Image (cartoon, rainbow over the protein chains, first blue to last red):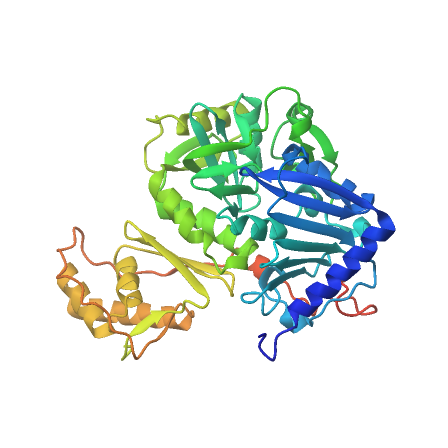
Length: 356
Length: 143
């Protein structure tokens, strides 16, 4: 039974599901199956417009639909400018989590800036995703879509979305790149890719049993900040999925799945945690403590996706206890960056000195 | 000095301690904290429900030195952690008495609760002030 002061999320879910079915009849269905960490998630779009906006970033995860029925299905539609919600502003907590979502059948996440509503039926394995207007979808939602939906879909089977990148190679495994936006994760990941390492992600990966799994085929470059590959390099890293408008604060979005040659890899076992920090001079790799790495990994993951009350911190703590942790002072030469990441993946890295 | 036992405010706080360093996240305020050395030990003892007077006794025995300095430092740190909403009063707490401490390899230094607020932007989205004044809730302001 919901508490008296909480919104009636079960009833709202059922109303929203009926609205989705109406949209489906009106606009037709586009279905795709995605595979994350060996498990399938079904997407059922009502109409083409939303599918065209969200699928490019997920293209590398699309699989043949003739397999077994997915355990979780996400139904997606455009609700229109007059789409309402079943709660008031006082019910919306951190990162859009709606009051009452921590128990019962239905959890709701309302991203008030974009108007995106994600509704999770914990018992039925069904998730609803409603946007008001495709034209007003933020650029980051197109570059890394459905994060709350995938968070809940994967958490049911033990996977956790983590705010981190990952690069490496199949022979040695991968390095998790941890830190807040602007710390140099994408710069380091693209430098590694340019020099022959493989790419799991630059900003979000799925972590399960010490393995980082790919979610998105995109990289987001802060070209306005003057960091990242030099002119000409983005075209080697991938095709431009979305340009960054000058002065908008947006990032250039690259589609790495469209890159020629090996680039994306579905998964890598994590052998090191690296915390990049934009430094501006010489690149340097040095050792840090597990808790220093956890400071870079835990808060930014928890505060972006606080949907499980911070439970992900336990998983991240287990990881940093097991693998060596480093700070990567990000200098100006991509080759040096790649060499430093390469060193961190070695069984006995040369850079074992403690950071000052 | 806090008079009674304390416990972690586990409705809003997650924490991990590895090798005498502690990360604490208060996920409603968007603030996180770190402690090391004696501060991390004091956190661990307080989180286990050990009364403040016994934390002082434990730290004094482990570190030696000036008992007044240890007592004052423990009291200040516990008070700060209560003020930050990391620890709350737990009158019913019954902690296991920790084993007699080994002498510390280094002298006592006054613990510092390092506080980080750089992530608060993620948590402080204000749905009321982001509402479009014409269209009303739940329509966000454009631009």
